[in-house]
Each structure stands twice: as structure tokens, then as C-alpha cells.
Figure 1: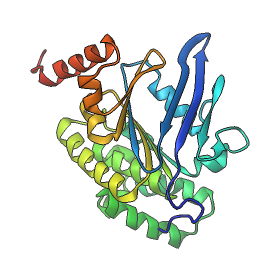
Figure 2: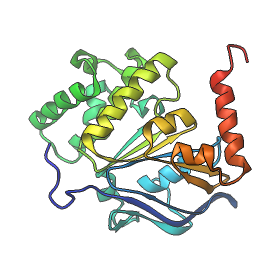
Figure 3: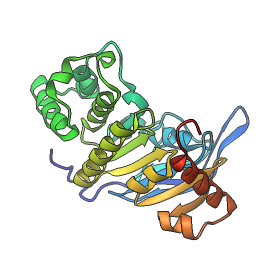
Length: 259
């Protein structure tokens, strides 16, 4: 599918001093972050640090209490929300599929909503099934009839259906067993490289962040602690928490069964 002429080199994501609280408890505290066009930034940190909140602000599911989110030159606000969402693909754990729809119906749901005809939907679906490595026969099945890896491939197809500028990935591989996860990691990185999307990838796994991210952003208690390459975080930690986090990740990786 041809790229839009108005965005020949992709779209960046910019958060400017973004704050968000729930019931008076801060979830994000003045976060400023840029995801350059056609690059992948991996957002990492412990559970409850604000990673998913940040992603939901980018996609417009939440509104910031302060600051702003920009997609290219356009603010993510009420006026522009629908148009911007059509330029984003959003993938969550288990694919977030509608259980009462077949895989094909899940993939096509947004395209049909914006008025694509059946032949256009079918052609794009065939293209995406090949890209995502999903057998076309699987598209006739319901989510409960698919494996975890297959559901994630369907979720990725749905996210890519409208050929979005931006991909937002919220721990999409966290629930998969290690072999399936490793295979999907390889496939996803190849897809990112081929399509040159702007990607914000949320994970709790340092190895996965290093595998996907051009830049890693470590978040703690709603604040950015450090951003840089894996080597930056390992060799030049900004504070003791960075070293503690990385050592804990290494411990998990090397721990045996029952540890």
C-alpha cells in the first residue's frame, strides 16, 4: 500500500511535560518524551510505573491533566482524536480481539467502519496475512479457536489494516510461552524494519526492550529515570535504581525453575 504523500518520512510522537493522576494519585509526573519518526522507542519499567498510562494518552484513550501529546504537528485532543486514531495501530496482550467475531472480522472491523468495500478489505487482508505469517485458513476461526501466538498475529494485522503511521504496542508478547515469544519477536522486528513505522513498544523485559528499541526509556513512579541505548543504561546508569532494575532483570533471566 502506497504511503500518503503528506507524510513521506513518517510521523514522530512528542509528549510535552505530561502529567496524569487517578483519584489524586500521580501516575505520570511531567513526562517529556520524543519518539522519532520511523524509529522504535522501548518503554520499560516495573509494574505500575505509568507505562500503559503513557500509551493510553498517546492513543487518546485518556486525556492528560497537564501538558500535551503531539502526533506529528497535530495535538491529540478532542477535536483531532478520531482522525489521529485512524493513523495509529494499537496492539495489546492477547491481541484484544472481540470474541464474537472471527479473526477476519476482527481484522476488518475498522476498515469497514471507515467505508472500505469488500474487495479492498480482502486484498489488504491477504497482504497482511502473508506479512504476519498467518495461514489464511486461520482467519475463519474465532479467537477462542486460535493459539496465543495466532491471536497476536491477528491483533497485529488489525493494527496494520489502515497502514498507520504509528504502532503502539502494550506488552503484546508478555503472555506467550518462550518459544512462541522468541519467534514472534523475530517476526515483529522484521516487520518494523520493513514497514518503517514509528513504534512505541511497552514491555517489562529489558532483553525485549534491547531487542526492539533504538532507544530505551526507563520509567519509575511516573517519571523518566533514564533514556539511551542498552549500553548507556548498563555502563552509565543515571541513578542506583537503574542498576538495581537491570540486575533484577538479569537475575530473572538466569534463575532456574522454581526460583
